[in-house]
Image (cartoon, rainbow, N blue to C red):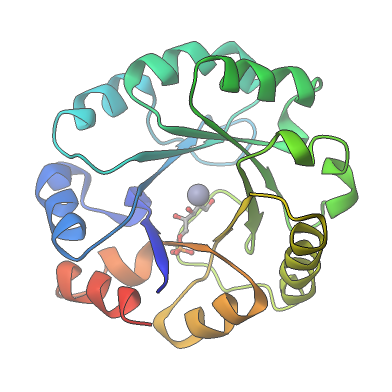
Amino acid sequence: MAKLSPSILSADFANLKEEIEKIEEGGADYIHLDVMDGTYVPNITFGPPVIKKLRRTTKLPFDVHLMIDKPERYIKNFVEAGADLITVHEESTIHLHRTIQEIKNYGIKAGVALNPSTPLDNIEYVLEDLDLVLIMTVNPGFGGQSFIGSMEGKIKKLRQIIDERNLNIIIEVDGGVKLDNAKEILDYGADLLVVGSEIFESEDIAEKTKAFKLL
Ligand code: DX5
Ligand code: ZN
């Protein structure tokens, strides 16, 4: 069964509590929180204070995707706000190994995200420290973009590496995931799908969430 992490990036921010209840009702496994700083990506969203308030509205684990420069400056704040998993971009932090260790020292899960142009090789020497690798299948910054087809090979290659080495790492895929391509993406080897616009721009958020869970 598909594991699902709906991204609230495309949600109605004036009704977040209600919309989160709907994805919970639909069977979401996590809630994906896209944090953007206007520097690392050309968009701005929200930070620890909003996440802290949302923490009280749901029992779903918080999958926090940091699209910010030098994320090491704020790990503690996101942990205190209620993150269960923090993913940083490989390209955003100079001492990636240190940043990963910092996240893990707080007793939560650590992930690394790779932009479409970033090779898998860049995480070769931290792979064994990771709980999750997030493959970006759009350029980060906005919801509603199209899945970049050439990421198929990247997901398959990562699946192969993880299986060959018998590693316990979740492959998360983020960007352009729709009902009509989700099955294929799972077949490439993804474990966890991030879905933003397809769920939150639909007429019935709970039903749409359920539809992904039935794949
Ligand atoms: C993009 C974000 C995604 C985004 C996905 O930078 O990381 O999580 O919300 O949105 P869709 O599913 O609309 O591509
Ligand atoms: Zn994301």
